[in-house]
Image (cartoon, rainbow, N blue to C red; front, side, top):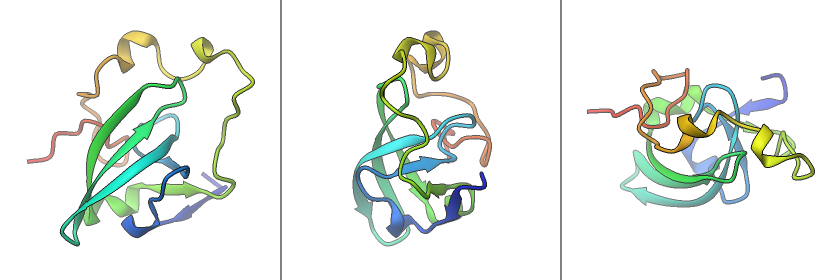
Length: 108
């Protein structure tokens, strides 16, 4: 992640690309809604075009990185060839651990 910078939750803004939500590819932030000052719900789009939402907490900041140039991928490639296999992205309820991807981590 040489082209990424450390972030705070306040840095999550629409159209920014973020690493750390999924372990192998960045997502693009679509919207952010704060829940108090320590947590937010954000909606994002994956490189294959799927959208999802997740909760992020202050403890998650160290796992996330804003990409310096805004996006690591472009829209000129075949969308079917990017991202995870379709059957792995059909649901957001993945079992990734923190810093290996936060999507669907199911925090208690």
